[in-house]
Length: 142
Image: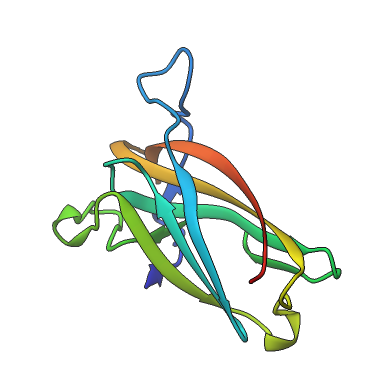
């Protein structure tokens, strides 16, 4: 389940992570499963509840390209009121649909790029500030 960004409120990764910040860069894509027209992605945020995904794209070596979305979108029961009661902590799995003709075939390498957002801290005007990390994942379809 995901909730689209609205004009009143949207996730923002302006906090960042790594050296010079209070947040370690610990997130990763832990599993990808392909079905015709469906990408199942599992992200691991090492004990935090992932709260948004952004800049979500894939490309394979056969030339298939999908941009699921560019601007961050809330996931995992997150929304502007920060409803943490239903969030899954640690690993989070979601399914994303696309044109089935773009599904990578077995034996083809693919790349996925996604920004992961977690640890909501404050609301700044119309955005919710999060720690964020850009992640790249390359593998072969089995």
